[in-house]
Image (cartoon, rainbow, N blue to C red; front, side, top):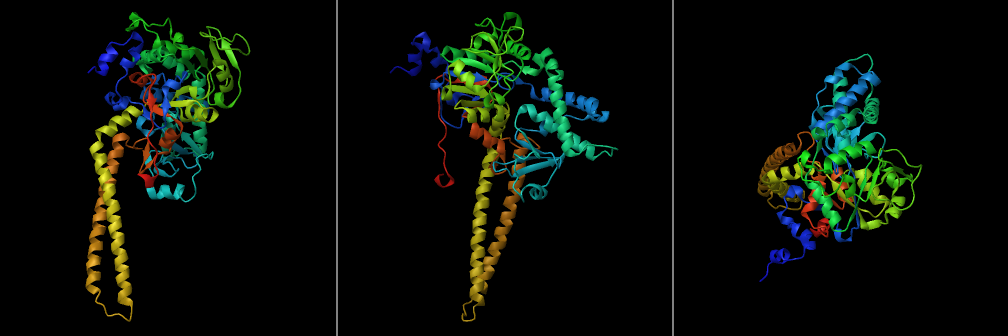
Length: 508
């Protein structure tokens, strides 16, 4: 019998793409594409990509500290903060995606899918669960309220770290004048924006791309694979042209002098049919700003640009309606790959029928950690089942005890019930001891598991028994998600990603 590999080996050259696709179970779990809802790549005509944190993955701890240092400098020079804050220690573990800043109380908490906080911190100190419940569970916590700020992107993590550090600093230092918690958050936001606008951060990154940006050798192969299958590609980034050009050239232009094989494309621009910079997402999906064509130096050629997009030309601004008309691709024939839950996933889903793929750089750590502690997770599941069983048994005995009490108190009966009551009380006491022991083991093991992911916040996709709010948003707005764009190379460009059958609790 002829094997599948023999058939592929003897197939025409145009089936090389099929031969290069790995069997899904052979792909390392940290490099897989995970599916929330069905996605047929054979139906996709055009694939778009964000740049920062999507095509360009950053050395996250290093760029976060750079962002924090630049912001601290602005706080001192522009807002009059004491110079002593320049010595604050940076800890990259202090923030993860999915946190909420309470700018009134100086707190940061991590909500579950229903908005209820699990872990909460004030500055650098833990808030116990009882206090967190008093603050956030007695009334409905509306995360859309201006009181709260949502940390949903890697770009925003330094803001949360800096806020925690400054809250702690000012709580422990008596100064003649110090900002309240709300003003402190506004100052951080203003100064971090200023550091980005005046080039304080991107100039340093641009001058040391090798130190801040990870060059993935498989990225060029992945984009070429999409193009070879007949799909058109576009770049849609909020970064300006000068920075975009430097980063994309670093990622994709290959020469022997730079330690790589010569690229099949003259420059990175030839991978893409349409290039849009300074897109202004999420307004790209909600407003109607015009497209402006740029020359090679980034200067506008005219006030507006109309007609079909010209390959090789750079465009600035724009909106989704004009994009779909000019690119002649719309709806579920377009797949957009990005990293921002609001600016890339949610807004594109609500403004169009574009399909979505989310890049979650943290996913490699989450999956690797999950697999490493799988025995502990299995033990936690067994403790969950034991707690449910003990609760049920305890409830049964308590019901029986109440029934016996009613019989004993009834004046018309002379049934002996004292011995039975004693037996049940002994059983209840034992069940309570077993329940306390199991609950203590459960708390200890859950803490150990959480620390393996992050000592302050645990896994980003879970909060206690529930999926985290961030995890719920990924589930709701990303058709598929993965840790990096180059993971698509492990799959056929015609892959049918099948999502799991959704079930209600009574169907499980």
